[in-house]
Length: 202
Image (cartoon, rainbow, N blue to C red; front, top):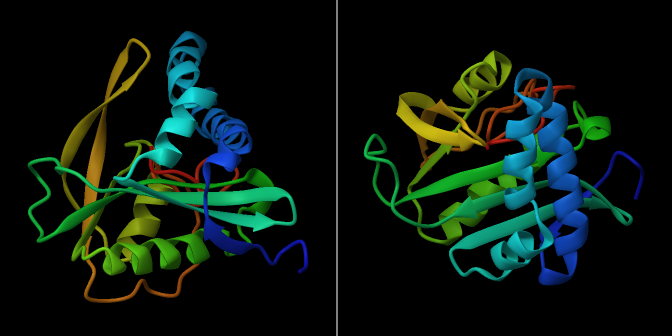
């Protein structure tokens, strides 16, 4: 395996500590420069605590896969089964809750690989619609998801500390594959670029 050849595997509870550190690092790199430090700290202390990651990796309604190279996490994707926002009207929906890629892996195709695995996993679980939330100022990520077949269908609130933000919701049917395009940027669910790309759906 080369440094640019990560493999994808299911995450387990033993990955919780490494994944918590990785996810917080990517989130801060992506959104930190554009938000108040106190809001970032408040969100990260809850969303990426060890206890929270252990809970997520044990939850039956969350499905998480890692892209790993040796002992290093290059990225991860997480699906969430559950009630969607009202604006998501497609049949049998599932949420792409997070898609994070580490800064040094951005532009290496990791986001593409994770998107393909997430799509396959969603279909295996009976989903026919995939949706995500993307940061409204992440224009590169929005463009990337549009190229992948996602369409804007509404907005949903995202609480970052004391700051209530509105994230665009994008949706696509799962009766077709993503286009073979490089991910240019990041979202809340994200894809890669050095700031806002290969990373995250929030």
